Amino acid sequence: MNLPVSIGILKETTENERRVALVPEDLKKLASKNMNLLVQSGAGIMAGFSDADYLSAGCKILDSRSEVISEGNLLIMLGRPDSSDLKSFRSGSTIVGQIYPLRFPSLTEELASRNLRVYSLELLPRTTRAQSMDVLSSQSAVAGYRAAVIGAFHLPRLMPMLTTAAGTVKPANVLIIGAGVAGLMAIATAKRLGASVSAYDVRRAAGDDVRSLGAKFVEVGLNAEGAGGYARELTEEEKKKEKEVLEAAITSSDLIITTAGVPGKKAPIILSAETVAKMKPGSIIVDAMAESGGNCELTQQGKIIEFNGVKIIGSTNPQSDLPINASQMYSRNVISFLSILIDKDGNFVDPANDALLSACMVCTDGRVTFPPPVKDGGKK
Image (cartoon, rainbow, N blue to C red):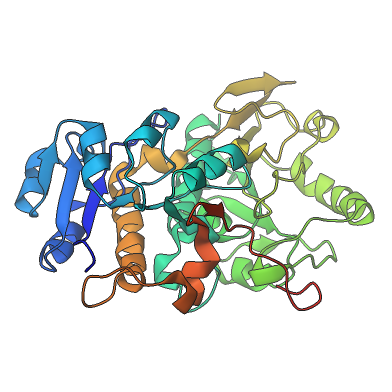
């Protein structure tokens, strides 16, 4: 007979992290299914959710982090466990978070060695069925909004066009590089602030999304759409063509927001130091990909620097600056994921029986399972 599911929610320990993985409103749904809900004291306080809120949702509040880990058999988090947490996990427990196994292979090996089953939500495939579980999209939307607001705050000029007794103020020229979820939200936000917005993406299909928001799409003549609708890496020849066409748009922009990434790889360098040197003094670059290495060659993660009068902001974890909504959105994604992870009888579903579970499982039964083995002559 399987043990009842005991869900543990921990206080996130990443520096400057203010979000929480599950919010009280969603936990009420789980309490009604006779699950044990364990919350580390203070886990939601930075996101606007008190211990009293969790108590009202049917949770048990525990002061000790290690107690939550040892009593829970399903641990939900935003990121990944600390190395100091590992000794507290029960063998056979399940972890759900964003592990990034290719970036943290040694941690993945350690989790496997402790006989833990781990699901990494950022690995969920981009399919219709997985839409409601898509943490990358929900958190990227928050990041794109925040990047535009950060840029407007630092910009030494007004964003909108104004007609005043003192004359007409032209709108700021804003360029968004990367038109995924974060980029599209940055476009929409900059448009709402009144800027003149252009955007670029290596995927030709993204042009329709850009234009639908009232922005101009910078045509380079490339189409680097890879698997699952994500961008692929450019060839050297494509990079050269990209640089030639983009430079005019870059040097005429007052604010540039970069959101271009390739799943599982370092962010591509799109703004070289040479190109930044040609930008107007007073221009701003908000590099939303700083945590993945940055789209600008000069970006320093978590820092604001100046180069030839251009301010470069290495934005890290912008979602945490808006922890209330970011937590609510992540929590809904998790609740949707739990609907396929746990069956109607309260038992864990065998990942071999669900394509989504197997796609995002990084380890189980003492072995690492991601990336999955290549089959059928090289096709996954």
